[in-house]
Length: 195
Image (tube, rainbow, N blue to C red; front, top):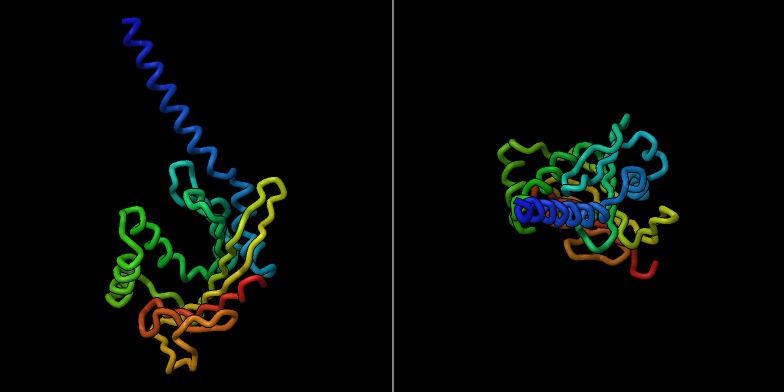
Protein backbone atom coordinates (compact mmCIF):
# COMPACT_ATOMS: atom_id res chain seq x y z
CA UNK A 1 0.00 0.00 0.00
CA UNK A 2 2.85 2.41 0.84
CA UNK A 3 4.56 1.69 -2.49
CA UNK A 4 1.26 2.29 -4.32
CA UNK A 5 0.79 5.67 -2.57
CA UNK A 6 4.40 6.65 -3.23
CA UNK A 7 3.99 5.77 -6.93
CA UNK A 8 0.78 7.79 -7.14
CA UNK A 9 2.42 10.77 -5.44
CA UNK A 10 5.46 10.61 -7.75
CA UNK A 11 3.24 10.37 -10.81
CA UNK A 12 1.20 13.36 -9.65
CA UNK A 13 4.37 15.31 -8.97
CA UNK A 14 5.76 14.47 -12.40
CA UNK A 15 2.54 15.59 -14.10
CA UNK A 16 2.43 18.74 -12.00
CA UNK A 17 6.07 19.55 -12.75
CA UNK A 18 5.66 19.06 -16.48
CA UNK A 19 2.50 21.18 -16.50
CA UNK A 20 4.15 24.00 -14.62
CA UNK A 21 7.19 23.86 -16.92
CA UNK A 22 4.94 24.04 -19.97
CA UNK A 23 2.83 26.79 -18.44
CA UNK A 24 5.85 28.96 -17.66
CA UNK A 25 6.27 29.48 -21.42
CA UNK A 26 2.90 31.22 -21.58
CA UNK A 27 3.16 34.87 -20.61
CA UNK A 28 0.72 36.24 -18.05
CA UNK A 29 -2.38 37.98 -19.45
CA UNK A 30 -1.02 41.51 -18.92
CA UNK A 31 2.16 40.71 -20.84
CA UNK A 32 0.20 38.98 -23.59
CA UNK A 33 -1.98 42.07 -23.94
CA UNK A 34 1.17 44.20 -24.27
CA UNK A 35 2.55 41.77 -26.89
CA UNK A 36 -0.65 41.83 -28.89
CA UNK A 37 -1.08 45.61 -28.80
CA UNK A 38 2.54 46.16 -29.87
CA UNK A 39 1.37 45.37 -33.43
CA UNK A 40 -1.57 47.80 -33.34
CA UNK A 41 -1.70 51.25 -34.87
CA UNK A 42 -2.09 53.82 -32.10
CA UNK A 43 -5.62 54.85 -33.06
CA UNK A 44 -6.89 51.25 -32.97
CA UNK A 45 -5.20 49.85 -29.85
CA UNK A 46 -7.39 51.26 -27.09
CA UNK A 47 -10.60 49.61 -28.30
CA UNK A 48 -9.10 46.45 -29.78
CA UNK A 49 -10.30 43.03 -28.68
CA UNK A 50 -7.25 41.11 -27.43
CA UNK A 51 -6.71 37.37 -27.80
CA UNK A 52 -3.94 35.35 -26.19
CA UNK A 53 -3.02 31.84 -25.17
CA UNK A 54 -4.09 29.67 -22.25
CA UNK A 55 -1.69 27.19 -20.68
CA UNK A 56 -3.18 24.39 -22.79
CA UNK A 57 -2.35 26.32 -25.99
CA UNK A 58 -5.93 27.33 -26.79
CA UNK A 59 -6.72 30.87 -27.87
CA UNK A 60 -8.71 32.84 -25.31
CA UNK A 61 -10.09 36.36 -25.08
CA UNK A 62 -7.97 38.45 -22.71
CA UNK A 63 -9.88 41.69 -23.19
CA UNK A 64 -13.14 42.48 -24.98
CA UNK A 65 -13.05 45.12 -27.66
CA UNK A 66 -15.15 48.14 -28.56
CA UNK A 67 -13.98 48.73 -32.14
CA UNK A 68 -13.48 46.70 -35.33
CA UNK A 69 -9.98 45.49 -34.43
CA UNK A 70 -8.60 42.22 -33.01
CA UNK A 71 -5.05 41.74 -31.70
CA UNK A 72 -3.41 38.37 -31.01
CA UNK A 73 -0.40 37.83 -28.72
CA UNK A 74 2.62 35.86 -29.90
CA UNK A 75 2.10 32.10 -29.85
CA UNK A 76 4.36 30.69 -27.08
CA UNK A 77 4.70 27.44 -29.06
CA UNK A 78 6.71 29.34 -31.71
CA UNK A 79 10.35 30.21 -31.17
CA UNK A 80 10.17 33.63 -32.81
CA UNK A 81 8.05 36.50 -31.50
CA UNK A 82 5.19 37.46 -33.82
CA UNK A 83 2.06 39.31 -32.78
CA UNK A 84 -0.68 40.49 -35.06
CA UNK A 85 -3.64 42.85 -35.25
CA UNK A 86 -6.34 42.77 -37.88
CA UNK A 87 -9.82 43.86 -38.91
CA UNK A 88 -12.49 41.85 -37.10
CA UNK A 89 -13.85 40.45 -40.39
CA UNK A 90 -10.65 38.36 -40.64
CA UNK A 91 -11.16 36.57 -37.30
CA UNK A 92 -13.35 33.72 -38.66
CA UNK A 93 -10.68 33.02 -41.33
CA UNK A 94 -7.83 33.07 -38.81
CA UNK A 95 -9.79 31.09 -36.20
CA UNK A 96 -10.52 28.42 -38.79
CA UNK A 97 -6.82 28.31 -39.68
CA UNK A 98 -5.91 27.79 -36.02
CA UNK A 99 -8.53 25.05 -35.77
CA UNK A 100 -7.16 23.25 -38.86
CA UNK A 101 -3.62 23.63 -37.51
CA UNK A 102 -4.69 21.98 -34.23
CA UNK A 103 -6.15 19.13 -36.29
CA UNK A 104 -2.75 18.63 -37.95
CA UNK A 105 -3.48 20.15 -41.37
CA UNK A 106 -0.36 21.39 -43.17
CA UNK A 107 -0.05 24.94 -44.51
CA UNK A 108 -1.30 24.11 -48.02
CA UNK A 109 -4.31 22.21 -46.68
CA UNK A 110 -5.17 25.06 -44.29
CA UNK A 111 -5.34 27.44 -47.25
CA UNK A 112 -7.11 25.00 -49.58
CA UNK A 113 -9.79 24.02 -47.04
CA UNK A 114 -10.52 27.62 -46.07
CA UNK A 115 -10.73 28.73 -49.73
CA UNK A 116 -13.15 25.88 -50.46
CA UNK A 117 -15.24 26.84 -47.43
CA UNK A 118 -15.31 30.51 -48.45
CA UNK A 119 -16.35 29.61 -51.99
CA UNK A 120 -19.09 27.34 -50.58
CA UNK A 121 -20.28 30.16 -48.30
CA UNK A 122 -19.65 28.23 -45.07
CA UNK A 123 -16.75 30.45 -43.99
CA UNK A 124 -17.26 34.23 -44.22
CA UNK A 125 -14.93 36.14 -46.52
CA UNK A 126 -13.16 39.14 -45.03
CA UNK A 127 -14.43 42.52 -46.12
CA UNK A 128 -12.60 44.01 -49.07
CA UNK A 129 -9.38 45.70 -47.97
CA UNK A 130 -9.39 44.22 -44.44
CA UNK A 131 -5.91 44.86 -43.08
CA UNK A 132 -3.57 42.84 -40.87
CA UNK A 133 -0.51 44.26 -39.10
CA UNK A 134 2.14 41.65 -38.24
CA UNK A 135 5.00 42.45 -35.86
CA UNK A 136 7.94 40.01 -36.17
CA UNK A 137 11.14 40.08 -34.12
CA UNK A 138 12.03 39.66 -30.46
CA UNK A 139 10.21 40.44 -27.23
CA UNK A 140 11.74 41.73 -23.99
CA UNK A 141 9.60 40.51 -21.07
CA UNK A 142 11.24 42.89 -18.61
CA UNK A 143 10.50 46.08 -20.54
CA UNK A 144 7.49 44.63 -22.38
CA UNK A 145 8.73 46.00 -25.67
CA UNK A 146 9.44 44.49 -29.06
CA UNK A 147 12.45 44.89 -31.30
CA UNK A 148 10.71 44.08 -34.52
CA UNK A 149 9.46 45.15 -37.92
CA UNK A 150 5.87 45.49 -39.07
CA UNK A 151 4.60 44.05 -42.31
CA UNK A 152 1.16 44.74 -43.68
CA UNK A 153 -1.30 42.41 -45.33
CA UNK A 154 -4.37 43.83 -47.04
CA UNK A 155 -6.97 41.21 -47.99
CA UNK A 156 -8.56 41.68 -51.41
CA UNK A 157 -10.53 38.47 -52.07
CA UNK A 158 -10.18 37.15 -55.64
CA UNK A 159 -8.04 40.09 -56.79
CA UNK A 160 -5.25 39.49 -59.30
CA UNK A 161 -2.20 41.33 -60.55
CA UNK A 162 -4.27 42.33 -63.56
CA UNK A 163 -7.20 43.68 -61.52
CA UNK A 164 -4.93 45.66 -59.16
CA UNK A 165 -1.88 46.56 -61.23
CA UNK A 166 0.33 44.88 -58.62
CA UNK A 167 3.14 42.44 -59.26
CA UNK A 168 2.42 38.83 -58.40
CA UNK A 169 6.05 38.35 -57.35
CA UNK A 170 7.52 39.37 -53.98
CA UNK A 171 8.77 42.96 -53.95
CA UNK A 172 11.04 43.75 -51.02
CA UNK A 173 10.01 47.11 -49.65
CA UNK A 174 7.03 47.33 -51.98
CA UNK A 175 3.53 45.92 -52.44
CA UNK A 176 2.73 42.73 -54.33
CA UNK A 177 -0.23 40.39 -54.47
CA UNK A 178 -0.04 36.92 -52.91
CA UNK A 179 -2.42 34.07 -53.80
CA UNK A 180 -3.96 36.05 -56.68
CA UNK A 181 -7.39 34.98 -57.90
CA UNK A 182 -8.26 33.14 -54.66
CA UNK A 183 -10.60 34.06 -51.80
CA UNK A 184 -7.45 34.61 -49.72
CA UNK A 185 -5.77 37.00 -52.17
CA UNK A 186 -3.91 39.72 -50.31
CA UNK A 187 -1.50 42.56 -50.86
CA UNK A 188 1.79 42.06 -49.02
CA UNK A 189 3.89 45.03 -47.98
CA UNK A 190 7.17 43.98 -46.37
CA UNK A 191 9.74 46.57 -45.35
CA UNK A 192 13.23 46.18 -46.80
CA UNK A 193 15.62 44.06 -44.73
CA UNK A 194 17.51 46.07 -42.18
CA UNK A 195 15.03 48.91 -42.11
